[in-house]
Length: 288
Image (cartoon, rainbow, N blue to C red; front, side):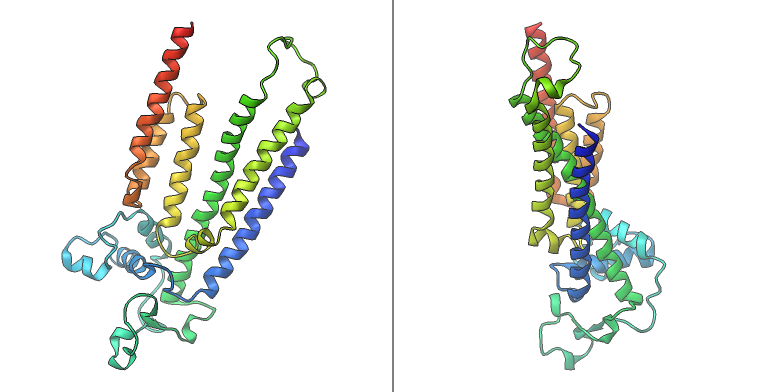
């Protein structure tokens, strides 16, 4: 890969990430607090951990921590670790509709659980600051997902290009200038890098990813860990990291499981990757 090609590709990737970051931060600021699905439950869970320094241990404490408190806590531990120092006693505080019968003309649960007042304006303080820092944490995880997606796509498309553009078998052992003898080879490199950048752009500017990726919930961390898992799977199948690769897959699957239960199938992927590698090894022995 030439230096100019690498710089050009990273420049495009950096521009996509910058535009995504601007859009995600703007989205998180203009979207009223609590408008995302289950944001309240995730906030209560993280805040309970920040206030008490531990997970809820009884039904009564889980009631206080919200209905997500029986779910894996990794995201909430991260949010609590980021915001534990913020004082929450005294104003400004959230104006819950459930606290006053006069406010209960609309449902007191879900996105309209609070009255939105001038307290939510910048500069943020106390509970409002916690909420926005939690959203910024999610944006950081989502940004990491985009970076990992680039490298995973690069590995994938590089493998496809390598299979479709094999060098001739009669190529001399020592080639002094591969670009001049095989002009399509450099084009191949440019193509798979372009496809990797386009993959990142399609994900970054998907409205659902943009919205979900900035919410105060565990989806952003789940996507980051899952994308790292996928990237490592591709690397292992391509015969990288033979000594520690499967340990890494196990660690990532474990972290994903303590983030969200829906990643329960990841260990089955490890079994499949192991089967692929065993079949590949046996094929080499037969060919040998």
